[in-house]
Length: 184
Image (cartoon, rainbow, N blue to C red; front, side, top):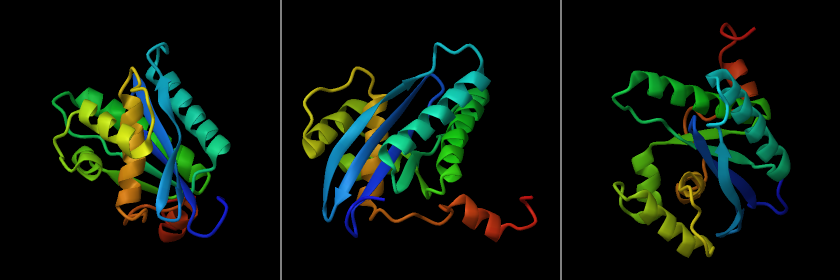
């Protein structure tokens, strides 16, 4: 998809049902550069189903615009509110489905793993993550919504982990092949 051998594009996603952050980086040999980062605003949509459709559509748009080779997502963390956790898991699932529909491998990372990979501290604040990304990727302005840098952090974490898809990260075709009785 990207120019020479070893070059690739990684899409990082920080799932959310009010705001979803995303970031795209391009890996060129051992170097990396910022392509784009931002947020998908979802609070203006009344129903959860409409939010999920918007997530799917926007992730597909990002895939069509930037043709990432891999997608990395932040895994939902367990909170006290089960309903919020369920909605967040659905948002993540829809983003995963968009990537899988284009046969792009996906990898999940725990929030602490992302922070650890980017800052060296698994308990770093969103502001500390954003500051480190500004240094690493050489951009000037910190976005108003740090969900954008959170999505970018997931992409950088994936790169720092060697950019290898982990166990469980597969294309839809591989999933179907591995699970012949589950998919018709």
